Length: 179
Image (cartoon, rainbow, N blue to C red; front, side, top):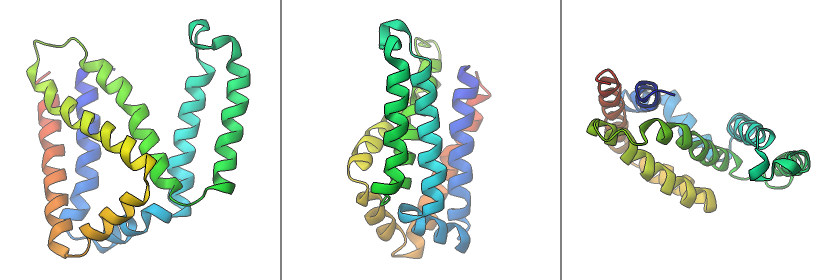
């Protein structure tokens, strides 16, 4: 992945997440509020995360337990399938956290050793914050529910937060075109 794509993609994601909140969309606020316990979001986010993780397992090299990849693939497939049945609470939050952690690797790889481009830090720094938050929220997924309750307790908070996220997304999109 190029540094251009690694900066543009998170910028677009941030913009499309923040813009509906900034505009005060009732659909967006209802979707965000129901996200932590949404069955549809669980299937989407955790399913996508499980598929991506299993893809990585299937493509392990011999140095990374590649000789056991079939056993690992079967074991993790079983764990992912049983998660839907045995631990359905906050599965969408866990899936989102896993996706953030998996997506961080190619994005950080694109910015690795690009010291002559200091604007890359506008993408890398929030990405490290997102990694830390994904680890924390993945271990304690009810924190996402509590944060969303706090965010939507006053309408101005979600609008200001959405505007900030959308503006940063636009900034990242603009920075991407400088590479």
